[in-house]
Amino acid sequence: MTDLSRFPVARRWPATNPDAIQLYSLPTPNGVKAAIALEELGLAYEAHLISFSTNDQKSEEFLSLNPNGKIPAMIDPNGPDGQPIGIFETGAILTYLADKTGRLMPKEGAGRYAVLQWLFFQVGGVGPMFGQFGHFYKFAADKVADNPYPMERYRDETRRLLGVIEGELGKRQWLAGDDYTIADIATFPWVRALREGYDAADVIGLDAYPKTMAWVERAAARPASQKGLNIPPRP
Image (cartoon, rainbow, N blue to C red):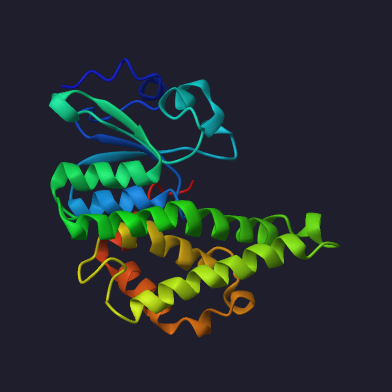
């Protein structure tokens, strides 16, 4: 049985099975990506809820795993050279899981970099911009009621990024090619959140991106997505 005692986060959120991957997350557009990938790959894991309502992500134990204080984060008890490893940032987690299993991303060649470029597109563009739009449109609307600029700025950038995705999905079924990859897993929950989480389908004009929305439906309908989108369960 793997000893996780050197990880303070595992002392606050104890593992039932320390030989399984330990996921510390919340079902947000960012948080679900790791769970969906773990489900796709069929890896044994345990999910621990990191509650924002009690500021779990700012606790000393969680910060010991992710000093940036963001979800998700993960411990793999069977990391490189068979030693436990802690990982944070979804781009790093998804790349690690793909490399560990040899799935959801080509091991080498041009196809690998096609996946990585779209993964970085999400990490550097889609996530931050969609998140800021959602913040000002839904969660902080009262704070900018007299200043439409923040919402409009991020709304327009969200539309622009959706246009990039729409153009690419006119050429192929999935973001990085003919196969479903970590690039799709990283991105579709954020597009889905515009409708499901932010209730912004009309203000964004999602009907103008039919290929993108069809892609979201394909990705969300996968059994692993259906499960991963709700892991860890909210109380």
